[in-house]
Amino acid sequence: MNMHREIFRIAVPNVISSITVPLMGIFSTAIAGHWGDSAQTIGALAIGVSIFNFIYWNCSFVRMGTSGFTAQAFGAGDFEETTAMLARAVVVSVVLGVAVLLLQYPVGEFSLWVMNGNEMVADYFYMRIWAVPAGIMLFGLNGWFTGMQNAVIPMCTSVLVNLLHVLLSLWFVFGMDMGIKGIAAASVVAQWSGMLLSVVLLFAVFGKTLRQIDLRKALDMAPMREFFRVNTDIIVRTFCLCGVYTFFTAASARMESAAILAVNTMLMELFTLFSYMNDGFAYAAEALTGRFIGAKDGVSLRSSIRHSVVWTMATALLCIGIYAGWWREILSLFMPEGSAEAGDVLSVAQQYVGWVIAIPLAAALPFLMDGIMVGATQTRILRNSMLVSTAAYFAIYYGLHPIIGNDALWLAFTMFMAVRGVAQYLFSNRLRTVYAEAEGRR
Image 1 (cartoon, rainbow, N blue to C red):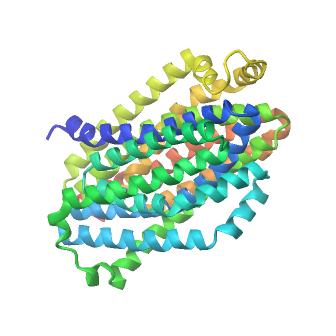
Image 2 (image 1 turned 30 degrees about the vertical axis):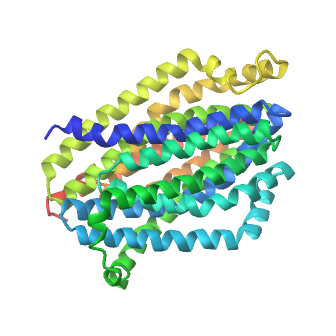
């Protein structure tokens, strides 16, 4: 087996689909920056997006839990179980989507209060909330596709969603003068369009496999309990992750100037671009880890992890080079050309850009370890490592913020990433726990 080819077969479509997400965020931020008061609008968008990141990421357990179990069933050749996993993912996604819509008002008001959101943020929230059910369903479907070793369908869906989002945002914001609310409306149309495409491709590609579905087996309480046991760990892990990212935006919003919030938002977009590029290889590791554990193929598992580490670090070094050489040109895209405000923001950015240049080295391997642990369904390790790194994040921030200000926020975030990767490696007994799964020694 050519492991490079196997990794790239899954990673390349995932890189393409993943990279469209931060690119959409970059375009959305640029659109917001060119409409109205740029710094204020970028800040409002950042708060609104942060609220939805919290909602979506806390529902992402549907994707992660589905992917690992499906990949292991695929590796074992148990296609009846793979279809059962699809049914479980769909049922859970529908329940979550309906619950979010029913609770939108209390969730919205609480979020606006916590994040110090203004009327502009409220307009964004109450429009975009209608995209959430489609987004959660896409989590479940994409998790299943990844477990089935198919990265092409999520790529097609993601490209459609994000292309539609950008085009419709331009139309709604500038053509219809909807402002930030137009970006939210574009998200609603794009997410539902993506979900419909995903369902069509599901039946087109996996129609024969779906005939094996047994709803009684799928909804049997024993496998459902195991599904929720794994997902409970993932929920705790994701809640901590969301808390870290949301706190980053909230703390930025409470800094001494709107320029710091705008700068932190733009620099975080660059980090997010790197993270989604890296996620392509993390998803490949996730799919292959589950597959080789299901097939009890320890040799291939070790090979896939070694090769994934090489490509993950290569991606990190590529991003470091790009950010170090062209950060000013990239950030200039967010602001109106030649404006005095753009000059002020770039001046502030120069003080903190070193963090986003350096952070890929700290974050590369933790992202890969996430994929390995999800594929191996070692979710307790995911949970425990996240608890440790989250504690480190808040301790560093509150300990150093009075002394070094915004640098403390970036230092805390960088160490949060680094500690997470180290903890996962140590808690898995230097990956021996994962290898034991494939070698029948658990």
